[in-house]
Length: 265
Image 1 (spheres, one colour):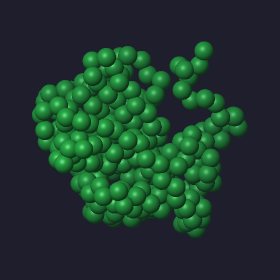
Image 2 (cartoon, rainbow, N blue to C red):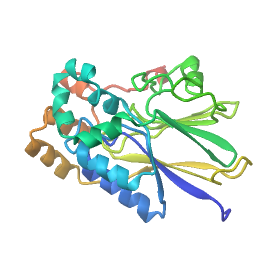
Image 3 (spheres, rainbow, N blue to C red):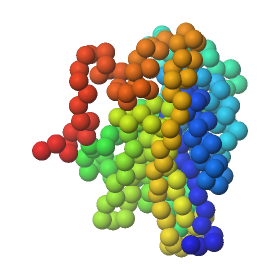
């Protein structure tokens, strides 16, 4: 083990689930990891966005903007989604301004690799890239855009948004990682985050690893709080937290299907 190795925890998609967020942060601290980067969507869907924003600002070193942050602080988006006013009104004005001003991406070096984190894609917080993407979508995740700037292209990209953790590498040494969701993970609803380990700020090749961590939490207490708060759609939020079944599937009365469609024969 290199004495100079450092670890950074990558969390995403807390979605106002304070109980899950606290459990994950406690696990990170118990492992001796002191650096935490938040990949966005700290707010929305769950009942305690304001508390999660405060906790994230206290514990996370880096924040990037997610689609919920962008939407809740954009009057035009809110006008087209009236129900979202509940989550916007839960935030203080100073919190909303802070969320509105967050950067869209962040780059750092570790063990000779340039690592880039953002919420959904380098094009937009609203452009969704699922596990079952094509080659063009994969390559596009490593592209420089107006949001990322014109620096060196990344070797490793980590993102959130889809609530579905996975890792994919190609023969040119590029690695794409989805870190999953802390507060609203789908399929397996257990909160998940990622730890990257290597030599920080180094341009020289050195040992490097990526680890996925699942953390159990008291989801029933979070569900009970959502109902007490009067939050809209608390019923479908409850289904997602208990089962990992996305609300659209539940509403349409469909049986959950295998979500990684290109893996089917």
